[in-house]
Image 1: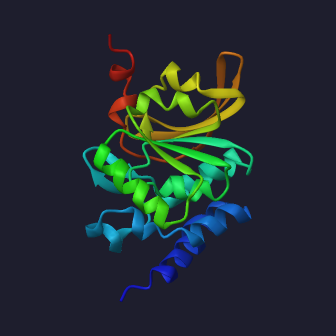
Image 2: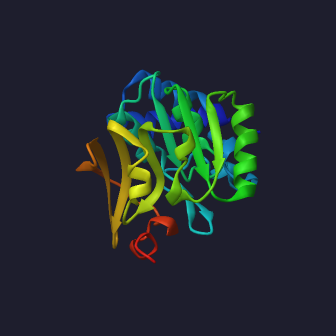
Image 3: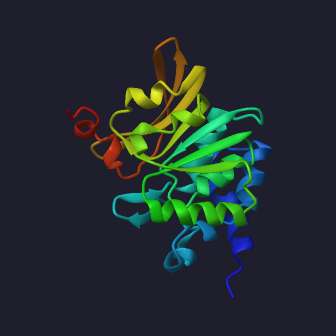
Length: 217
């Protein structure tokens, strides 16, 4: 029988800590949340491998290092609301829920959303909500948000999401340009977001955030 708890410890010790992520809430969340429960059954054995986990249909689970470093820079506190876009079965949502006051997960696949809600309940993420709807529209009815994260690659971020970010709020996105990917952190001031490069990473571009999709008429 697979010792998933040991694999979680190994993930933290070999992927998270060496990436200079040392904040206790992040380490504790990644040691506690059972990542294997947030992947399709056929991929449970691959839940803790280093790298992006391909979920099919252009969807993925970001590698643990990428998620951890995003959370480290965003520095979420327990009085903040977070919008988590495209979390699939909700692993990133469950991890973030251990730090934030509220996490709203947006999943446009109804079957994934229903399964995510069940898994999150089993994980006792009582402060997480799964909202069914297009990724690019977010979930304005539950906002505005202190923090927004997107669980996949992007080329552009639509204004509809930026509008749901509070003044002085933060947003983390993995911008992909060809074979290169860079996680950027944006800070909102007025109607503008100022971006800065944080670290290199990669993931498939989500269709909702490709340049053509965002600017189509």
